[in-house]
Amino acid sequence: MSQAKALQVGVPLRRLAAAAAVLGLVQGLGSVVRDCALTCHVGYRHAPLAFLIVAALSLPFVALQIKMQQRWGNESWRVRSTLLIALSLLGFRFLLSLLRGESGPAGVSSVLSYVGFFVWVDVAFMLIGAQLFALLQGDEQETERGLTVFAASVFAGGLVGGLLTSVINRWLTERLLLPMDVARDHLMILMALTLLLLIPIARASTATRVRVDAPNNTEVETPERAGAVPSAQRGGFAEALRVLAGDSQARAVTTAFVFAAASGICLESLFYWILTLNESGGAGFVQLLASLSIWMNGASLVLAAGGSARIIRHMGLAVSVLAVPVCLLLGSGYLFVAAALSVMLVMRVLKDSLSGGLYEPAAERLLVRLQGARYGQQRPIFEVASRLGSGIGALVVLVLTLLFHASLQVMVSVVVVIHLAWLISLIPLARRVR
Image (cartoon, rainbow, N blue to C red; front, top):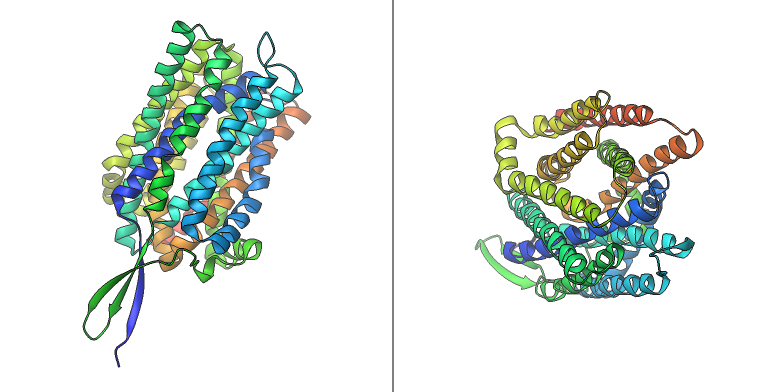
């Protein structure tokens, strides 16, 4: 009697690359809009409130995603959620046009709308990114190849998004003479239209199962049933919590995710602080953020397209994971000496390029090695740990700035301490893979 086994394989890499490029393009456009809106209309002291709200909504939305995948199937959920997110971006643009006064955005309603846009964009990108990560299913070698393609495509899309933002904003403000905030908010429309390109990709990205007949060693590909959801993904809140804190290894991974995200939020809050002290807004402000996006995505693309793979092979997985928090620890320590805008801009590029171009590929490979066959199902849930870390970091910043009115040097000290904690949390995981 023959025995057969089923292996889950991911979507073709060209489709995954196309989807990742679209996601990166939308993120490239959206990062400039949300950063500019948050800095200009909310202020650096209250900006961490948006991070805190994102963290609070992460687990409920991940649980909702698991339930909707179970009810509708993976493909239907990808299509419907993408369409909903695109329509919501158009809704934000329409709402902000109604709330705008003669002198620009004003009043509590406009501020709340911009905070809502910031929160929703972060949550939406988390959901879409988790859906694409879930398509990376296969053995370790296949997943590593998919991660390289995915990262390179995202950063390539982000680079194009930054270039488009710079060109379109300049054309809208200099040729059409639109106010800065109107030209900036019009990019929400382009975000929505670009996001719709994911729908045909989502429909064409149904994974397959390869059935291997043991005696004959033959392979038969069969389409994955649209409504089928792996049993490990069922359970909503309970399943997400079980994955995050189920055993010592899961807790170690969760801790590393939390500290990595917390350090990123504190460093980003410090960036908004120094940026606000040195820039007053205007069309040049959008161009500055667009140029920053180009540099960040360009440096990340160089690393993701081949540089990080060579570094990881040369230094080893454990050293590559530890190298990034060490570099950021040294860089944030330099802010004690000079906290000028130019130094902070270099730190922001360093943080995003090293984190996205080296740390994330190395950390994903480490997680693949630790999780094995469970990676494809559990990886999206670990994203909740990142959002939890974002919430902790945002809460620390809020307490320091609003309650204790901490100085800039105190904030730099907090960033250094959290970078150190992140480094320490990675040491046990690095030892395991060695």
